[in-house]
Length: 431
Image (cartoon, rainbow, N blue to C red; front, side, top):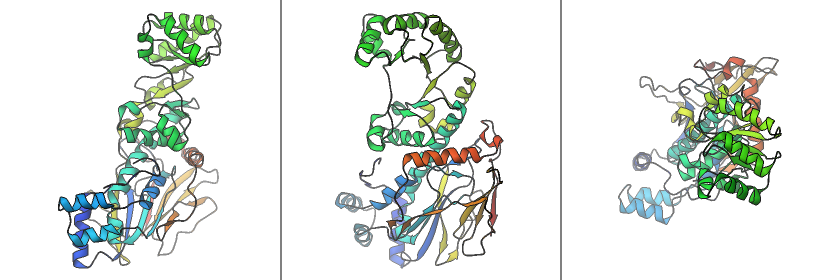
């Protein structure tokens, strides 16, 4: 599903087509509707969320089709009737989409994405929209916490072996938007132009008769600027051998096991004593934002993060939902206990102090009187599609990275804490 040219296949859910079939049968399919994506709450312990995957959603909507293979499958399995199959055969989304730009902060109740169109056109997009936004937002939000914890030190994304092969590519994209420096995933580099980096694993050292031979082969192939993995056998001996082979200009060593904080301290002293004062220390091995924060005082130059990143560091989904909020201009709302929704299309703005610190998220009804805005307030939703067509060129990943950085700087200082707490700013609803 990654990349602008990938097939959409059947990126929809059985129950969506059941609703579509019913609406086509009773004549309600063409009623104009508004659906909204929002999160009722942030994942446990989180104080902010970051929107990820917006451009992937828009790219997918643009190519969302039911081709001959998909229609044949639906017909053979009798998922829907012929009337519905005929409707799906000519499906093209021709409605409007507004939302938060990729990399924007969000909070409980934020109208992250607004989809306006007929019920039929909009309802079949629910699964694909949520699958992308929930995944990418979870990864981006977790990655941003890691970047904050690293306090300026670079992080390498290296989680491809811990997730689905397609998710690995889009996880690397989300991590890069959050501020990661590089990825080890070469497909992410090809698809999205993300800088790639990597070094040898323990298998390369074990392949050779001894550690010296392995290090020599790597340096011969890649130069002294490479990173040597020194903990296959004994770290102290590994560092000595690395410097003997590469010299004091060795680019970096990597430590992938043990108490990396203590080992990094000892390694720094040893490297300095060997004259390798500029050789960097990279650590990896089941790191998350808490481990990175704990290493802040240690002589670590860069981090490699895998499993925690691609699993959202304990929050693999952002918990976003896609709800019908308006039919024929009439507000509708779900009343189920603990799953309530607020009826009517909504807009949002964020209020700030004159210093730029965010104060509150204000969610309002655009068809009513807008709240008074000051120079310190900012509207959050922007138009993405009109009549199914893009309103503007998509932002670059660099622009999204800058948006994330600006957003995090705008949070009150307590909003960046890793401890449990309330959302960094409150959401205020104006009906």
